[in-house]
Image (cartoon, rainbow, N blue to C red; front, side, top):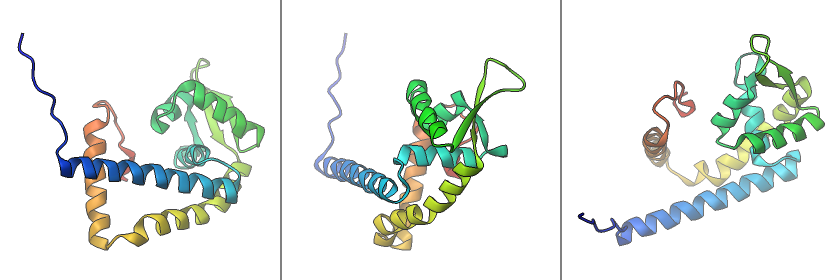
Length: 163
């Protein structure tokens, strides 16, 4: 049985990987703090509201929402419970399949999302895009699409980053 040597990262790859990890963590923390401060919600909740906003009739199957947001069903259930308590989302049984629950963005949730979006967009712009040239923005977009497409399940009908 032949063993193969691990494919270690070279020095440039290691520097790039560490810079990527630091940037992702710092950006995530920055956006989470901004949304907590300005909208009273973590970035995860904001993302769930956005996903619901972008769907027809502002509703989505809970299982689809968990898959799309890349969080576990139990974590999604806790988040939706909190969003329900705030009046921003409600759960409904599916009309076509009683076993299915839908998450629905309420009018109050839509208002909260509309109020939070400008500050969030400014935080993303100032933390990321204002630091890059137009060429770097295009390169970053292409790089992230290649990585995302390589990692996405092959049965993903819709790749949201292609919009």
